Structures are given as structure tokens and as C-alpha cells.
Image (cartoon, rainbow, N blue to C red; front, side, top):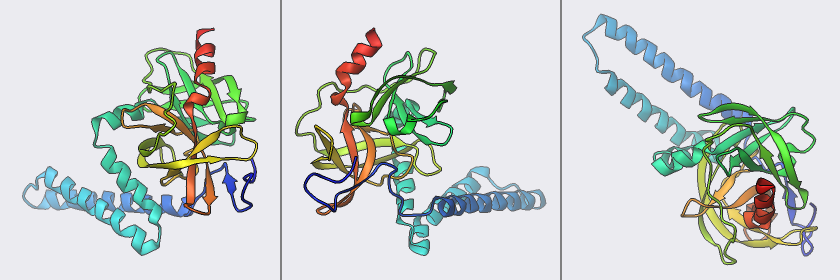
Length: 277
């Protein structure tokens, strides 16, 4: 990958951008969790001295305080990226989104981490090629199924995609479309493992397509909060079908910083062939 055929300012970042320092963000969130635990401990001590205090009231207050803290952190610390946690919290209230999340996996190599998603109950998984490139050992983590060793079945570096396999059965998986409409625009949902978090659901919009240098096909441009670790995240339409896979970000003159996602139908027929034979 490199510069666009048309614009010198068109920069591709396959590691995905970060507007915030992940260590700082992680510490802030962990600090708020510690504060909630301290408040819980103090409340338990007070309960021992006073009349019983309904536990559900405490947890309601604690949850409200945590949400409030998350709400003010972006203004207090100038970290707008924390908004994606609030959005994910809201999305995760949806039963269907929670089901989708079960099929999204964490992929870890010797020195790399990314996202992938199962496309069949017998353990076939799609991720980005750059997530598994040069990794001699891959560990695949399902939210409800545990850890598995991953095997690379085939790679498609020309589209930054790869097909993996884990041994097992009855895996949760996502449906995917073999024929992405040419005019596929509008709202999308994606789930990934950004920064130090796992299984974060978020939403955005497909705002168009762009042609990249050394690519023979166009890719989607997405207006959404995408960070390191989102590589390999499934992009789903309103029907819950995977239509694309996030692989990079781009500094775009017209739209600013956007995410890039390769349409799944670029390799769908090859994947079907690999699974059958």
C-alpha cells in the first residue's frame, strides 16, 4: 500500500490511527473502576454499622456515577475517543448485537493483536492479512468458547485479508453476503478490539468508495471511530450481514480521517472453495 494514484496527501495507515494514548486511557478507566470498588467497600462498612441499605440502590448509584464520569472525561481530559465506549454500552443493550459479539474474536500473535470473526460453525475465521503476517503462532479467543490455536488456511495480501481455521464445532458465527450491492451506503455496525478493550461494538456510516494505489478494486470509506486493534473487524449492514472488513485508516482531503474496509465479496467465492475442498 502507498499513496493514492491521484493525490499525494492520501495517506494509508494499516496500523490504524490513535488520537489518544492507550496507556493513559486505560489508566483513566481503571482508576474509575478502583474508585467504584472503594465506594462499595465503604458502603459495606457503613451497612455493618447502620440499618440495611438496599443493594440495588447502591449499584444503581454506582452505575450512574460511572456513566457520569465517562461522560465528563472527554471534556476534562480532552479525550473524545471515550465516546466510543458510551456508544458501545448503548449498543450492547441490544440482544442481537450481543449475539453478533459472540462470533467476533481476539487474534493474538507473538507481537501483534487484532480482530477476526467466525463465518461458520466449524471454525473458519476471517481477519486482515497484516494481523497474521509473520506470526508463527496464533491464539484465537472467543468470548464464550475460550482459547484456540489458529491455522492459516489461505491469504489474500492483495486485499489484506486472510482465512484462518480453529478446531472445534458449534462456534457462533456471522452471516456474510456474497454479493455486496454496488451502491451500499449508509449506517453500519462493527465490532472489534480497539486499544486495550475487547468486543467493543460501534456504529458509523459508509460514505463512499476510494481507489488505493496498487489495488485493482475500490474499498469503502467509513465515517466512524476506528482505532488500533480494529483491524479485522466485521462491518455489518442493517440485516446483520457482514459486507466488509476494516483494515486501515486514511487521511482524506474531503472527509478528513476515515476508516477503510474491503468488501467481503472480493474473496467470498474463493473462501467458499477453500471451505468445500
